[in-house]
Image (cartoon, rainbow, N blue to C red; front, top):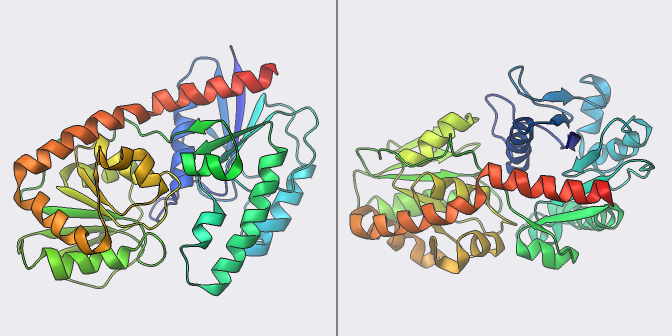
Length: 352
Protein backbone atom coordinates (compact mmCIF):
# COMPACT_ATOMS: atom_id res chain seq x y z
CA UNK A 1 0.00 0.00 0.00
CA UNK A 2 1.44 3.39 -0.99
CA UNK A 3 1.21 6.14 1.61
CA UNK A 4 2.12 9.83 1.66
CA UNK A 5 2.97 10.85 5.23
CA UNK A 6 3.46 14.36 6.57
CA UNK A 7 5.04 14.58 10.00
CA UNK A 8 4.70 17.92 11.79
CA UNK A 9 7.13 18.87 14.56
CA UNK A 10 8.42 22.11 16.07
CA UNK A 11 11.99 21.53 14.88
CA UNK A 12 14.40 18.92 13.55
CA UNK A 13 17.87 18.37 15.02
CA UNK A 14 20.38 21.04 14.02
CA UNK A 15 24.06 20.17 13.68
CA UNK A 16 26.09 21.43 16.65
CA UNK A 17 23.07 22.13 18.87
CA UNK A 18 21.55 20.09 21.69
CA UNK A 19 18.46 18.45 20.18
CA UNK A 20 15.26 17.72 22.07
CA UNK A 21 13.98 14.17 22.36
CA UNK A 22 10.89 14.72 20.20
CA UNK A 23 12.97 16.24 17.39
CA UNK A 24 15.30 13.24 17.42
CA UNK A 25 12.39 10.80 17.54
CA UNK A 26 10.66 12.40 14.54
CA UNK A 27 13.86 12.35 12.50
CA UNK A 28 14.34 8.63 13.23
CA UNK A 29 10.71 7.89 12.39
CA UNK A 30 10.99 9.77 9.10
CA UNK A 31 14.15 7.85 8.23
CA UNK A 32 12.34 4.62 9.08
CA UNK A 33 9.26 5.46 6.99
CA UNK A 34 11.47 6.34 4.03
CA UNK A 35 12.86 2.79 4.02
CA UNK A 36 9.40 1.24 3.63
CA UNK A 37 8.47 0.49 -0.02
CA UNK A 38 5.60 2.70 -1.15
CA UNK A 39 6.02 5.24 1.67
CA UNK A 40 6.78 8.88 0.94
CA UNK A 41 7.54 11.08 3.95
CA UNK A 42 7.85 14.82 4.45
CA UNK A 43 8.64 16.58 7.72
CA UNK A 44 7.13 20.01 8.30
CA UNK A 45 8.95 22.14 10.88
CA UNK A 46 9.97 25.65 11.82
CA UNK A 47 13.70 25.02 11.86
CA UNK A 48 16.45 22.40 11.69
CA UNK A 49 17.11 19.68 9.18
CA UNK A 50 20.27 19.01 7.22
CA UNK A 51 20.91 18.79 3.50
CA UNK A 52 21.68 15.09 3.80
CA UNK A 53 18.28 14.10 5.24
CA UNK A 54 16.78 11.12 3.38
CA UNK A 55 13.30 12.68 3.57
CA UNK A 56 11.85 15.95 2.31
CA UNK A 57 11.82 18.89 4.73
CA UNK A 58 9.10 21.55 4.45
CA UNK A 59 9.06 24.90 6.27
CA UNK A 60 5.36 25.94 6.38
CA UNK A 61 6.14 29.59 7.22
CA UNK A 62 9.49 29.80 5.45
CA UNK A 63 12.74 30.63 7.24
CA UNK A 64 12.52 34.44 7.51
CA UNK A 65 10.85 36.93 9.84
CA UNK A 66 7.55 35.05 10.13
CA UNK A 67 9.41 31.90 11.13
CA UNK A 68 11.27 33.77 13.88
CA UNK A 69 7.98 35.21 15.09
CA UNK A 70 6.35 31.77 15.16
CA UNK A 71 9.21 30.37 17.24
CA UNK A 72 8.50 32.80 20.09
CA UNK A 73 6.47 31.45 23.01
CA UNK A 74 3.29 33.26 21.95
CA UNK A 75 3.98 32.39 18.34
CA UNK A 76 4.29 28.67 18.94
CA UNK A 77 1.22 28.59 21.18
CA UNK A 78 -1.08 30.71 19.02
CA UNK A 79 0.21 32.19 15.74
CA UNK A 80 1.78 29.10 14.16
CA UNK A 81 -1.16 26.72 14.83
CA UNK A 82 -3.56 29.31 13.38
CA UNK A 83 -1.44 29.82 10.24
CA UNK A 84 -1.62 26.09 9.53
CA UNK A 85 -5.32 26.51 8.72
CA UNK A 86 -4.31 28.34 5.54
CA UNK A 87 -1.82 25.74 4.30
CA UNK A 88 -2.53 22.98 1.78
CA UNK A 89 -2.52 19.45 3.21
CA UNK A 90 -4.80 17.58 0.81
CA UNK A 91 -1.93 15.85 -0.98
CA UNK A 92 -1.12 13.67 2.03
CA UNK A 93 -2.82 10.47 3.17
CA UNK A 94 -2.11 11.19 6.83
CA UNK A 95 -0.75 14.10 8.86
CA UNK A 96 1.15 13.04 11.95
CA UNK A 97 1.40 15.88 14.47
CA UNK A 98 3.84 15.89 17.39
CA UNK A 99 2.65 19.25 18.72
CA UNK A 100 1.31 22.70 17.79
CA UNK A 101 -1.99 21.50 16.27
CA UNK A 102 -4.48 22.75 18.87
CA UNK A 103 -5.79 25.60 16.67
CA UNK A 104 -5.51 23.72 13.39
CA UNK A 105 -9.24 23.37 12.69
CA UNK A 106 -9.38 23.21 8.88
CA UNK A 107 -9.16 19.41 8.78
CA UNK A 108 -11.69 18.70 6.05
CA UNK A 109 -10.43 15.93 3.80
CA UNK A 110 -7.36 15.09 5.89
CA UNK A 111 -6.67 12.36 8.43
CA UNK A 112 -4.80 13.47 11.53
CA UNK A 113 -2.86 11.33 13.98
CA UNK A 114 -1.51 13.09 17.07
CA UNK A 115 1.26 11.73 19.29
CA UNK A 116 1.59 12.89 22.89
CA UNK A 117 5.19 12.43 24.01
CA UNK A 118 4.34 13.24 27.60
CA UNK A 119 2.09 15.71 29.35
CA UNK A 120 2.55 19.34 30.36
CA UNK A 121 0.37 18.52 33.35
CA UNK A 122 3.07 16.21 34.70
CA UNK A 123 5.97 18.52 33.78
CA UNK A 124 4.25 21.31 35.69
CA UNK A 125 4.67 19.36 38.93
CA UNK A 126 8.44 19.14 38.36
CA UNK A 127 9.40 22.79 37.94
CA UNK A 128 9.87 25.54 40.51
CA UNK A 129 9.96 28.29 37.89
CA UNK A 130 6.71 30.25 38.23
CA UNK A 131 6.64 31.45 34.61
CA UNK A 132 7.38 27.98 33.25
CA UNK A 133 4.69 26.52 35.51
CA UNK A 134 2.14 29.00 34.11
CA UNK A 135 3.15 28.18 30.53
CA UNK A 136 2.86 24.46 31.22
CA UNK A 137 -0.65 24.95 32.60
CA UNK A 138 -1.57 26.70 29.35
CA UNK A 139 0.14 23.88 27.48
CA UNK A 140 -2.00 21.35 29.30
CA UNK A 141 -5.20 23.04 28.11
CA UNK A 142 -3.88 23.16 24.54
CA UNK A 143 -2.87 19.49 24.64
CA UNK A 144 -6.35 18.53 25.79
CA UNK A 145 -7.74 20.40 22.77
CA UNK A 146 -5.34 18.49 20.48
CA UNK A 147 -6.44 15.20 21.96
CA UNK A 148 -10.10 15.91 21.19
CA UNK A 149 -9.40 17.02 17.61
CA UNK A 150 -7.28 14.05 16.49
CA UNK A 151 -8.66 11.16 14.44
CA UNK A 152 -6.34 8.98 16.50
CA UNK A 153 -4.36 9.82 19.62
CA UNK A 154 -1.13 7.90 20.24
CA UNK A 155 0.41 8.17 23.70
CA UNK A 156 4.07 7.57 24.47
CA UNK A 157 4.00 5.87 27.85
CA UNK A 158 1.23 4.43 30.00
CA UNK A 159 1.11 7.51 32.25
CA UNK A 160 0.42 9.70 29.21
CA UNK A 161 -2.29 7.24 28.18
CA UNK A 162 -3.94 7.58 31.56
CA UNK A 163 -3.89 11.39 31.45
CA UNK A 164 -5.46 11.65 27.98
CA UNK A 165 -7.65 8.55 28.15
CA UNK A 166 -6.35 6.95 24.96
CA UNK A 167 -6.21 3.18 24.37
CA UNK A 168 -3.32 3.59 21.92
CA UNK A 169 0.16 3.12 23.42
CA UNK A 170 3.24 3.75 21.29
CA UNK A 171 6.95 3.62 22.04
CA UNK A 172 9.86 5.52 20.56
CA UNK A 173 12.41 3.67 18.45
CA UNK A 174 16.19 3.53 18.21
CA UNK A 175 18.33 2.56 15.21
CA UNK A 176 20.15 -0.75 15.85
CA UNK A 177 22.84 0.24 13.36
CA UNK A 178 23.74 3.22 15.57
CA UNK A 179 23.00 1.94 19.07
CA UNK A 180 24.55 -1.45 19.76
CA UNK A 181 26.95 -2.95 22.34
CA UNK A 182 30.71 -2.75 21.85
CA UNK A 183 34.04 -2.21 23.57
CA UNK A 184 33.93 -0.23 26.80
CA UNK A 185 36.27 2.61 27.72
CA UNK A 186 39.57 1.62 29.37
CA UNK A 187 38.69 3.76 32.39
CA UNK A 188 35.35 3.72 34.26
CA UNK A 189 32.95 6.16 32.59
CA UNK A 190 29.61 7.50 33.82
CA UNK A 191 27.48 9.09 31.09
CA UNK A 192 24.71 11.69 31.41
CA UNK A 193 22.51 13.00 28.58
CA UNK A 194 20.16 15.89 29.32
CA UNK A 195 20.31 19.48 30.56
CA UNK A 196 22.04 21.16 33.50
CA UNK A 197 18.87 22.71 34.92
CA UNK A 198 15.26 21.54 35.06
CA UNK A 199 13.65 18.15 35.46
CA UNK A 200 16.53 16.28 33.77
CA UNK A 201 18.59 17.23 36.85
CA UNK A 202 22.02 17.38 35.28
CA UNK A 203 23.26 19.37 38.26
CA UNK A 204 22.40 16.45 40.54
CA UNK A 205 24.16 13.95 38.25
CA UNK A 206 27.28 16.15 38.30
CA UNK A 207 27.22 16.49 42.10
CA UNK A 208 26.75 12.74 42.58
CA UNK A 209 29.75 12.04 40.38
CA UNK A 210 32.05 14.62 42.00
CA UNK A 211 31.02 14.11 45.63
CA UNK A 212 30.13 10.40 45.79
CA UNK A 213 31.65 8.52 42.86
CA UNK A 214 35.12 10.09 42.51
CA UNK A 215 36.14 9.53 46.16
CA UNK A 216 35.46 5.78 45.71
CA UNK A 217 36.53 5.44 42.05
CA UNK A 218 39.24 8.10 41.59
CA UNK A 219 40.04 7.22 37.96
CA UNK A 220 36.41 7.52 36.82
CA UNK A 221 35.26 10.06 34.23
CA UNK A 222 31.90 11.75 33.68
CA UNK A 223 30.88 12.28 30.07
CA UNK A 224 28.30 15.05 30.24
CA UNK A 225 26.11 15.65 27.18
CA UNK A 226 24.22 18.84 27.98
CA UNK A 227 24.01 22.58 27.42
CA UNK A 228 26.60 23.40 30.11
CA UNK A 229 28.34 22.29 33.30
CA UNK A 230 31.18 23.54 35.55
CA UNK A 231 34.70 22.68 34.47
CA UNK A 232 36.34 19.69 36.18
CA UNK A 233 39.45 17.73 35.17
CA UNK A 234 37.49 14.46 35.05
CA UNK A 235 34.34 15.78 33.41
CA UNK A 236 34.07 16.04 29.62
CA UNK A 237 31.30 18.24 28.21
CA UNK A 238 29.64 17.33 24.91
CA UNK A 239 26.94 19.24 23.04
CA UNK A 240 25.00 18.81 19.80
CA UNK A 241 26.35 15.42 18.72
CA UNK A 242 25.13 13.21 15.87
CA UNK A 243 23.45 9.85 16.46
CA UNK A 244 26.72 8.17 15.46
CA UNK A 245 28.68 10.03 18.15
CA UNK A 246 25.86 9.58 20.65
CA UNK A 247 25.96 5.83 20.04
CA UNK A 248 29.70 5.80 20.76
CA UNK A 249 29.21 7.72 24.01
CA UNK A 250 26.57 5.26 25.22
CA UNK A 251 28.51 2.22 24.01
CA UNK A 252 31.84 3.10 25.62
CA UNK A 253 30.31 4.19 28.94
CA UNK A 254 30.09 1.79 31.86
CA UNK A 255 27.01 3.33 33.50
CA UNK A 256 24.30 5.70 32.28
CA UNK A 257 23.17 7.93 35.16
CA UNK A 258 19.85 9.66 34.52
CA UNK A 259 18.20 11.23 37.59
CA UNK A 260 15.36 12.89 35.62
CA UNK A 261 12.37 13.56 37.85
CA UNK A 262 9.87 13.19 34.99
CA UNK A 263 9.83 11.40 31.64
CA UNK A 264 6.72 10.46 29.70
CA UNK A 265 8.81 7.71 28.12
CA UNK A 266 12.55 8.36 28.13
CA UNK A 267 14.34 7.55 24.88
CA UNK A 268 17.67 7.86 26.67
CA UNK A 269 16.94 4.73 28.73
CA UNK A 270 16.36 2.73 25.55
CA UNK A 271 19.47 4.07 23.80
CA UNK A 272 21.65 3.17 26.77
CA UNK A 273 20.26 -0.36 27.10
CA UNK A 274 20.57 -0.97 23.36
CA UNK A 275 24.22 0.09 23.60
CA UNK A 276 24.92 -2.45 26.33
CA UNK A 277 25.16 0.09 29.14
CA UNK A 278 23.51 -0.19 32.54
CA UNK A 279 20.86 2.41 33.35
CA UNK A 280 20.74 3.95 36.84
CA UNK A 281 17.69 6.18 37.09
CA UNK A 282 15.30 7.98 39.39
CA UNK A 283 11.78 6.65 39.55
CA UNK A 284 9.27 8.37 37.25
CA UNK A 285 6.49 7.22 34.88
CA UNK A 286 8.86 6.81 31.93
CA UNK A 287 11.61 4.96 33.76
CA UNK A 288 9.01 2.69 35.35
CA UNK A 289 7.61 1.82 31.92
CA UNK A 290 10.83 1.40 29.98
CA UNK A 291 12.81 -0.28 32.76
CA UNK A 292 9.81 -2.45 33.70
CA UNK A 293 9.71 -1.26 37.28
CA UNK A 294 13.40 -1.97 37.84
CA UNK A 295 13.69 -5.29 36.00
CA UNK A 296 15.77 -3.92 33.11
CA UNK A 297 17.68 -1.17 34.91
CA UNK A 298 18.36 0.08 38.43
CA UNK A 299 15.84 2.50 39.96
CA UNK A 300 16.97 4.32 43.10
CA UNK A 301 16.19 7.28 45.31
CA UNK A 302 18.44 10.33 45.26
CA UNK A 303 20.30 9.18 48.37
CA UNK A 304 21.15 5.80 46.78
CA UNK A 305 22.09 6.79 43.22
CA UNK A 306 25.76 7.39 44.04
CA UNK A 307 26.29 4.11 45.89
CA UNK A 308 24.60 2.17 43.07
CA UNK A 309 26.87 3.78 40.47
CA UNK A 310 29.96 3.01 42.58
CA UNK A 311 29.00 -0.65 42.95
CA UNK A 312 28.38 -1.01 39.21
CA UNK A 313 31.75 0.54 38.38
CA UNK A 314 33.62 -1.72 40.81
CA UNK A 315 31.68 -4.99 40.39
CA UNK A 316 31.95 -6.24 36.81
CA UNK A 317 29.75 -9.31 37.35
CA UNK A 318 26.96 -7.16 38.76
CA UNK A 319 27.34 -4.72 35.88
CA UNK A 320 27.25 -7.43 33.19
CA UNK A 321 24.10 -8.88 34.77
CA UNK A 322 22.26 -5.60 34.26
CA UNK A 323 23.73 -5.07 30.80
CA UNK A 324 22.17 -8.36 29.64
CA UNK A 325 18.76 -7.49 31.07
CA UNK A 326 18.84 -4.09 29.38
CA UNK A 327 19.84 -5.49 26.00
CA UNK A 328 16.89 -7.89 26.08
CA UNK A 329 14.44 -5.13 26.95
CA UNK A 330 15.76 -2.80 24.23
CA UNK A 331 14.67 -5.27 21.54
CA UNK A 332 11.08 -4.06 22.08
CA UNK A 333 11.95 -0.60 20.77
CA UNK A 334 13.82 -1.00 17.49
CA UNK A 335 12.86 1.67 14.99
CA UNK A 336 11.66 -1.02 12.56
CA UNK A 337 9.18 -2.31 15.12
CA UNK A 338 7.99 1.17 16.06
CA UNK A 339 7.62 2.18 12.39
CA UNK A 340 5.47 -0.92 11.76
CA UNK A 341 3.27 0.00 14.73
CA UNK A 342 2.82 3.54 13.41
CA UNK A 343 1.97 2.35 9.91
CA UNK A 344 -0.67 0.00 11.30
CA UNK A 345 -2.31 2.95 13.06
CA UNK A 346 -2.07 5.11 9.94
CA UNK A 347 -3.74 2.44 7.78
CA UNK A 348 -6.61 2.06 10.25
CA UNK A 349 -7.18 5.82 10.30
CA UNK A 350 -7.00 6.12 6.51
CA UNK A 351 -9.47 3.24 6.06
CA UNK A 352 -11.91 4.53 8.68
